[in-house]
Length: 573
Image (cartoon, rainbow, N blue to C red):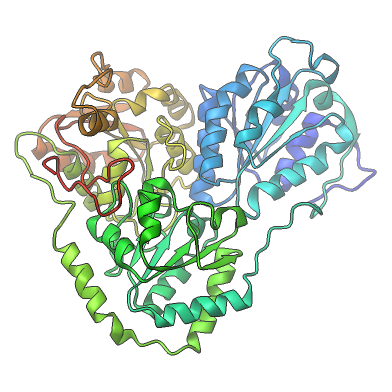
């Protein structure tokens, strides 16, 4: 759909709505204020776009982010000037660090008032510049439509990311004939999508020569919709596969070739395989410090590294690679698999490699001591996986609960696991679930949280009530800021400074006050029945407050600055 020159003149606010409609936007998350009231008035007349009123601008961006992670389509948020923008920064930064496509439309004071410390004025462009893929200040209504087209194009192509479009109030009120182009040329922005053929052939030869290959994938595989190709590559090569925290679901979690998540709280088998492999095929990853541990130790190992990524700046940024391939992950894997079809592969050479991996697996590093008296958080995650048959969308907050879910809920498909990886933002779980439930109302959408994280955006229980989001909340309540406490235990002599939550609310009563259902679960025997009852409740939100063992920590663990081989498998290590 596009309007041509000569169509009736539209106000800038109406252009924002018309452009959003042309981009296929069906949901805008936001919170009104004086600078964006013209856009809100235009939205009131739009029938094909639903606006969802959150209770805090941070949640607006998180919810748009969750929608984007669940669907692969861009999320859209709308906030006002001044504090509306500053409240949105955390959500924008969260999406930026995880490469999530967002378009955030911000209001601003009229152009003639800019720089004069007007009421609710702030330098949106300057404030957001470090945490966006790009941002625009629209000073002339004649440029508004083309700017919005650029914003959506930039957000969704290449390495995705958030784009901010700042619309002063006078631009929103001014009129102009609306024309929205089908495409937009950007001379300085042309992402390279086709991998270099010679590099792909070199990569195929390395893989064919490997005795101990390893496939290491991240969020880039999910962003590129390339999970099926990773599975095909693993089968062709007969190689073990690991998914980073952002890549979970990019390879089936129950497949025999999956060795678990790598890194700080990864499995022993994932980390030892990373350490011992002779050819590492890295696909859509950043070699994050939480994944590879001590970079000097990692670089000292004699292995060849193939790195495939759409973003050339990510290749060689943290580790030296032998075969860099810049391009769209999906396209590169298609080409790589085609070359491998004509390459001699001796899969029998893998026997000794799989024997080593099975030896590490036999250590059962994720095992924990069960109890009939106190609820173990791992037990809750396992029962949740059983009750949902591994098919739910899990939206996690940040903390120990996040790590237990990542370790113990095998994700079978991409976009089942929605969490903040790069920025590690507490409070995202509830608004993420709102975004995912809006996208997939027929699916079970579950927030995994803790007693600390849930309070960061707990006001969104009101949004869930107003818009009938019957999500399920699983709170692993141990009375502490659990991950902080664990780090204090490991690194600070068990001095638990300010990590004890001494005045927690009655979460069940709070949920009921917002019009929802709630359960407080204190006995292991009640865990499974309550989960199943909550999942059967399709018409309302259910808050499950599981009182868990406060002494339980997340193991294994690679201490900060240590090598992957220096894992602590238990608190006794």
